[in-house]
Image (cartoon, rainbow, N blue to C red; front, side):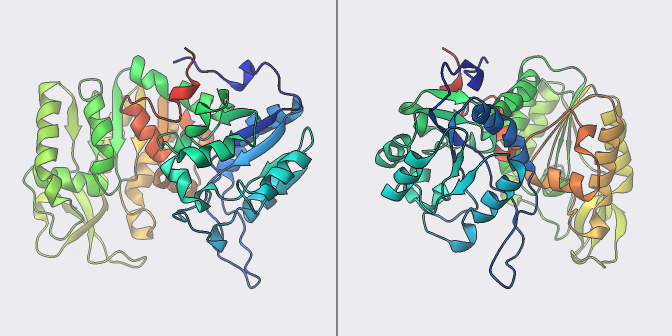
Amino acid sequence: MELQTINDIPEIEGKRILIRVDFNVPLTDSDENGHREVQDNTRIVEALPTIKHLLEKGGRIILLSHLGRPKGQIVDKLRLDPIARELKKLLDAKVTKSDSITSDHAHEEVEQLQNGEVLLLENVRFRAEEEECGDQYTKELASLGDIYVNDAFGTAHRRHSSTAGLADYLPAYAGYLMEKEIEALSPLLENPKKPLTLVLGGAKIDTKIGIIKNFIGKADYILVAGGLGNTFLAAAGHNLGESLCQHDKIELAQEIMMECQEHHTKIILPHDLVAASEASDDAETADTPVEDFVGDMKAFDLGKWSAEKFCNIITESSTVIWNGPVGMFEKKPFQEGSRAIAKCLAKHECTSILGGGDTINAIKMFNIPVESFTHISTGGGASLEFLEGKTLPGIAPLIKA
């Protein structure tokens, strides 16, 4: 996949450049004055190379981002003012925050923008037409710029006005972050180093079906845990008490296990799980074999023996894709499974690709340097859909003809 990137823009100086970034970052709770601050600026920092390059070339930068799910309504706590304040700290450039998106006032602010300056427009999802990719709204957005740059891989699986629609009206280019993500993930689809192992956790099977099916026959091992693993265990005939499980997906899980067997991909299920009566920081736990679950017992983490088995497979692998923690890592008694996987993968010399917000949050909670892994994707759903082999709507317009 060869992209049209910002290095291909013929002329930048003086041009109004609309950059779709993904500044959907966690914020602190409001203080006594109602102010919120950025809690984790990783996504903002990841977008800086693209912004800085275009600033240095004399571009007039107009940034587009969403924050949260305002559902087409103006929600004060989802305004981008904290983002603008953080951006000012990180950029050696004038940064202005607009309270508008496509109004006359926004046009005036764009017209006042000088070469090498930045204007951050208000949350694009304050307009319902954004997610609908409404034609009139997309044209309104396009009228603010001369060039469109998409650097928001995390939203590339959505056909929204600012993530895909703008490419219908403006010359479209990929930013450095978009290029970096695609360069890291594409080899996994084309010619991954073997043995290849998928480690899949999280709550539900729904979001993981596509990637599982795409890697059946390609992956050597698929390790499943978390709520996802519980559904597969139920499909294998185990009763896990009142543990999280998608009972309506048991037949699907059985079909997947049969396909894995037919195509010589080994799907590995947990043999033991950490059981407790409730999900709390002071819960009493017991490492319990899956066949010993009875009554109202609930599983909240991968058991010690299973974690060791997963780690043994990881250390034999040349490529590992991990998406989704293997337990409820937010609570202290249920962190050890995910911690074991993270530490093992961090030490092992292989191509290691991590995705999903919860996976990244777990890594940070365990104080494991991000440099320990080959690539940490900024897109959860986008990385999953990309690894399903789909051409995402936000990427399609950026591919060279």
